Amino acid sequence: MKMLTFVTAAALIAGTASAQQAGTPEAQPGAESFTGWVKVVNGEIQLYESQRDIQQPFARPCTSVVLPRDLQRTANLGGTQVRFSGKAVAWTEADGPVMNFKGSRVANDCGGATVIQADTFRVLRGS
Image (tube, rainbow, N blue to C red; front, side):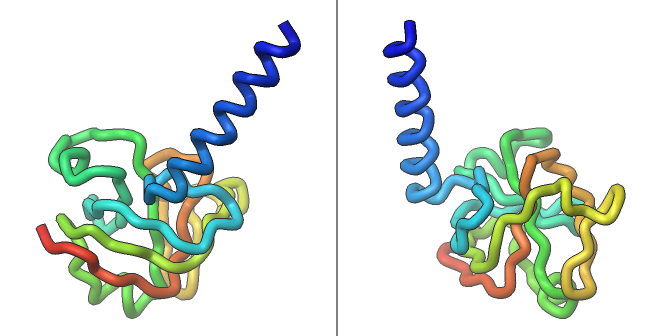
């Protein structure tokens, strides 16, 4: 039984590492680069693993992303594949029902344990 538990835990850890390297939006604290497809809902940037996911009305899982205020206001990222640079921060660090970041606010509509606080982004592909 202990061996099975160890193997299962090792598989989960390996799967998580592979997923992060593959660019899934499952943001792990400490990561610095996040790649995925963007949907913007009520002004909130949501990062998804595949282009197909952004076409679904309530697709999950996703990770909420927040940019500095000027970038957040001017970025037109919906429907694009984007690489964000920044850090994943635990949602527990939020200021109540929102998280503030460099003049922007995010409500974490994705409901994830982490939110990406991105300083920069690069569009990889358009919609």
